[in-house]
Image 1 (cartoon, rainbow, N blue to C red):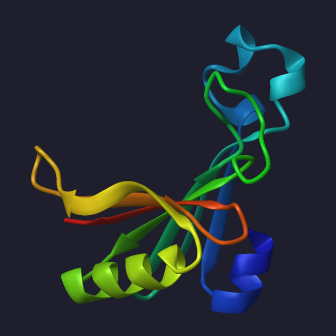
Image 2: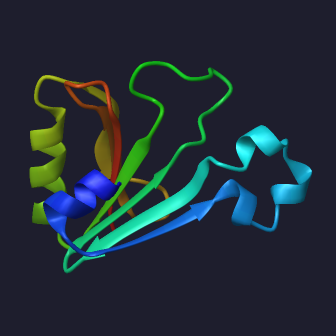
Length: 117
């Protein structure tokens, strides 16, 4: 996230698992993981975490990045560009609570979640 901040500018906030109210319920080894990192700059808002699902760590799933878009055009543009050469995990579509959402793995193996409300 510090690299993306250097690239995109903006304010970066990082909360570690060890700084969360749930820290006492988790093993000490988890405390250094990023629970949530947020980068905000104008129309860009990215949210990321080190935590992964039950499948464990695999190349590319160490971090999932979420981009909250301000317009549907921006959402469609970023989704198409990030998906080029990658794999669409969940096609971009309006979900049941009325938010446009899609997920993909880019050509470098990184996971992206995009949404537009």
